[in-house]
Length: 67
Image 1 (cartoon, rainbow, N blue to C red):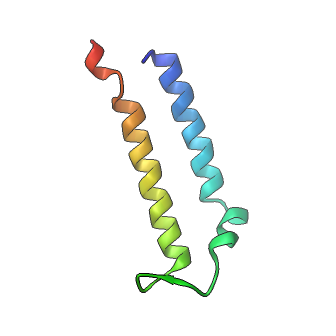
Image 2 (tube, one colour):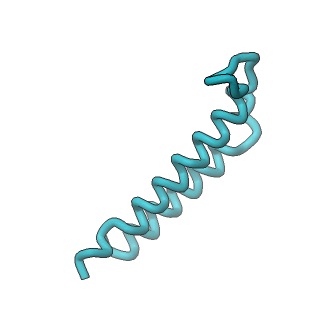
């Protein structure tokens, strides 16, 4: 993958992460529910955070074998 395309994808991922971890969308997860004994808000936070890290690693590493 070319560097400009990779940079654009990482910038878009940053914007998506900013929106995901920002206040208005966090209120969607503030419910009195639990997932495997963990309240929904922390589970959603850590799950979203893990997805962002995985997506960033995938974008950063994709195309690096073509050198």
